[in-house]
Length: 481
Image (cartoon, rainbow, N blue to C red):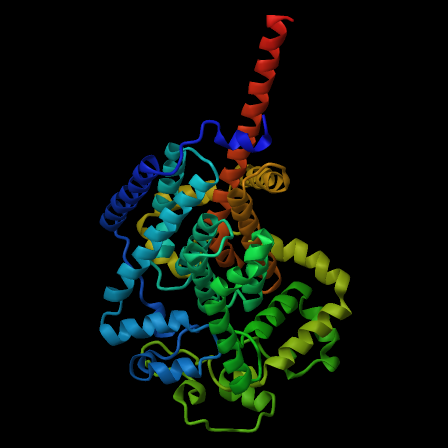
């Protein structure tokens, strides 16, 4: 028997049975939301008033187009979404955002289910896993938080499902997958345009040689949009990327890893950034870095603080942020080159464990408290060493399947994409952030389980084929010549 035929053994094909499994996931989603709502879970739209990632509420409502044009702190989609909600319901934007976030949660759950089917889990097992994911306390808590982690998960899940459907062949499915990848990069600066390029290269590697020009055509629209955004930032603010905060985040991570003693020892070689925190108000940046004062006439760039008097908040989209970004980048590079061994050693000691911290801290405490017992139980399960070990083994099996012979292109493409996302977020989350790295991990928590389940399914299938071959050989021997 050919190795590829093992994927046809015991597999329930997509079709009516698969649709029924999708209905099961949708029903589980709806029923769990009713239960959680009765338990007190509510959509938290408070970040609109003070989160650093958002432009001033009044500007998003009244000067949305201008503010998005001059937005350099973040990719634009999150601000666009909140801005549209403020225009439609100025006093209660949650009336618009809550259904959208809930829809994103349902979409992500269904896409994870489809991915599990493509990874050759049976429909009952895939439906059960999808229902468990969408009904888990952590999934619901983040879905009811007006921030982009839940949106990131939906973009990632959709990209994986549509990529698998496309089999790296040009067509509508691949174009939709490209839109998901572009939407992800336009939502979260964690996913730099370089990530989009790597994903595109991955698809090209799986595409047939004669179709690669059409594959590029399918991925071109989001790529052009991303390039246009980066070109805009280069023209207006002097950097090619989606966020002006990158160097500050890396600087904070490097200094926290190396510690204050090493930073102080190099202070004579460092810029004024060494005396500041990573994020300072605009007027403080102008003074510390001796920037030439300027008035752009754009409130989103000129305002030092946001206009909400009830919750004072700094405007980190101030023009001084990109103007002083190079100081932080140069200092971070200097410190890493000055203490390379200490940096690597302390990164492994401090940053890696931080990445695997619990994900229920800080901003989501209110909803967490409303389902304290269930949330704590899930946290204990998610953070248990045995859970990590089980997930790691599944990922290892998935990696082995990716390298094995006879694996269908769809399965191999999906596993490769999963490993790309897992690797990217893990590396960037560990090296590029400090303090909330666990929130980076949320982007890949469910994907990691999906890929792990796929690894176990592939392992079980190969074991089943080996046992079937062994049984056939025994029967042949028993039958005699």
